[in-house]
Length: 452
Image 1 (cartoon, rainbow, N blue to C red):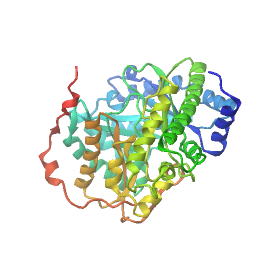
Image 2 (image 1 turned 90 degrees about the vertical axis):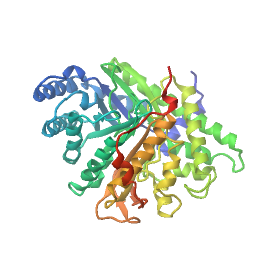
Image 3 (image 1 turned 120 degrees about the vertical axis):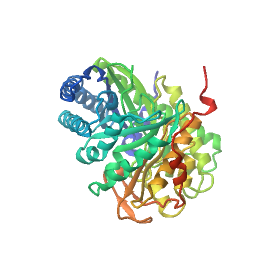
Image 4 (image 1 turned 30 degrees about the vertical axis):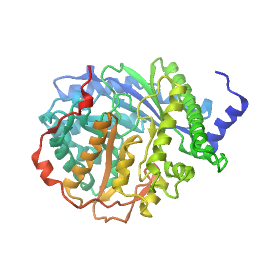
């Protein structure tokens, strides 16, 4: 495809002025062939394979980024889910494996490694339970390892017993060393894609190949800047078309960079994730885009409709640009990472229930939300259940990445730093759903899941 000089210059301006970047390059690695009866032998083999298969990865990524002048923020690895690599009922064996994984990731120079994952949508086995119990210690003792838990899918329904076991793990993770920020490395997810390059939910899917590449490109600042150039009286269709146009351009840029890296490494590029993942930088915000289109403050009436418009136009532009669009393409709304959303929470424009409603029309779910540390476990169970229900019924990926903050009350601020940002502690509904979870069991899949 031939680009005009103006189009090339526009892309350069997006990089220099509007925070356009390749947010993630994620190398997916299959470690199933490393399974052995002995945990030490398994760990030895997977450590050796990780070092071998990542040889040259960072050098290639860095060279391509420099050659083409586009920032590549994070270099990551997603591995086969740990629950499929180790079948143990000894929590200490999982901790040993996790520490070795984190050490290898540090030696390689990775920003993150994902795949400390278990699937609980049908049942919680004794080995799953050991992995779950290890999570608080693992996330508090490691730097780069991320963990994800799957208690629901559209095909299986929602496992209430699994959610009931997961919530104490989240609370203990925040309380163990009074460092709630480690909960940013833990996500509860419904219908996870097999090609998700974004942490904390990344893992390498079964049958995805021995070694594959995923690229995630983010550009909320580029979208906002483009909309600011439109005349104030532009009709809504003009807004949609402008979002599609910019989405097309940033997706093509992401695919180009991803293919260049993949070709040099001799592997396959399997997904281009066109996402609007905000940062705490001024203007690099989903909230500012929504406010620019037409609401006074993110969370005001009309926000859900505009977030739907944004997400849909973004996907349409991306799909026109590449046949590899996948992962979690769409608009993310992480509270602490988006300065505009954090300010909307602080001003009272949006609450937890409104955020939940927004997850019907955007990507992922309730993300990076600080809540009081004294939250009732049953309240947290209910919050997770509600988000899983949206995913199961809509057959989409939804998730909860929530941060209980010991000793903090609603309205106080949590400082996380860096790309994690800062946010006010959000209040939670104090009415109980204890009786629901005492029933236990599994909510069956919806009628829409029965397709053949």
